[in-house]
Length: 476
Image 1 (cartoon, rainbow, N blue to C red):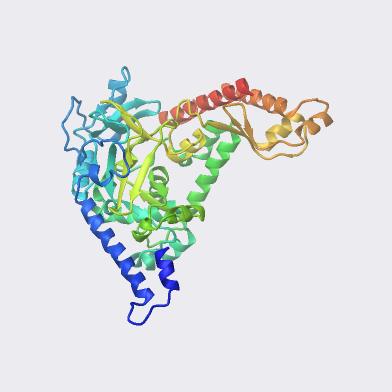
Image 2: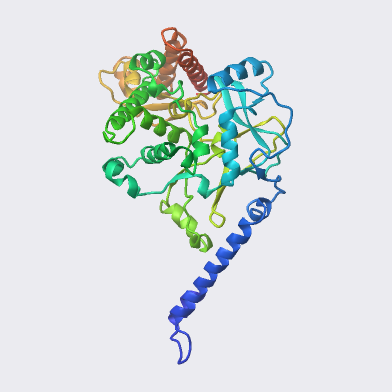
């Protein structure tokens, strides 16, 4: 308001022009901001983030520099770790900490050098429905509001909205970059470029921790016969997987011939981004952080959505019942993950990837969540039409929810049913279709699938879809 008033007052002789006063104030704010940023950045995290957390945060330490607890040591890559985790922890579910894993050791050393700091956390394996699952576990008691992980902007891989192709890659990738603006493609390319640099990459330690292969439980990597075998009872999901397989296949085949990458490289990078990246308004310029109301205005008009890969933070596994408090401090230029509940030694630190059904979780993240409260089952219009005896599809897809509700209306379904000699209302039709689905799912088997990972994923997915449809029928 004061700047606006000064601009309206005509300066008297000898006074400073209004624009110089405004610039002077703006400069003062900027200088104060920079001083604050430097001061805050040089202090402990518990001080610099005091305005974000109203609790006494846990002492932040460089990654791995915390007092050890009793652990079991394992060596080897993913498959050996998974087998040992399942064998050892299947009885009591206890995590097995991975102290001697070389890739983790290199990653944690890189974290220290890159300025990544964490609460007392450790990577560990535990038994899961689809084999061994690596995650983050507490090695000390953690209180709600504690800072769990802090990552400086310099240690992340990010893609800004409308970001142009980097100059040094413009000649080879410029046209491809413009043709495919999807964040999975563009951030995937940036990840591949960093991987090519090897140890000279600024994120070399992070890249070394990433699984070098796409998860075997990712359905888009299966052949069409296996996709039909696993999901033939669920046409909506089967078609979605086939569409992704076709789209990503066509995209990767369009890679420049002189790119230096194979189609499998880009598929890996796109999958890694799709399954690990965070998206949000993380790009707020420093000066905008001090303009009242501007972040809200940016959000209301669409804002700027930045996609980022966040080392260590993205090691946290998903749980739909957890909340996630992920902040970006525009002053210190750091990302931080805060604890949203108290955790004890040995507890896993989990976050929510969003309110997703198992359709999304399996297709995008390659896992199935047991008893997922947001799970659903989508019925195609032709399934409804067939049930009521129609001759052509009159309806769009309808999604069944576990609470007995269904999304999107089926206007006219009772009329069509009556025209074909049955007096059923909309709920009765949906109930009849759902009961028919149950019979189809219960008789589905997966012996023809050619790997244990596929069979486990298909079985887990089917079991959750059975749970969803049964819950729907009980509540409708």
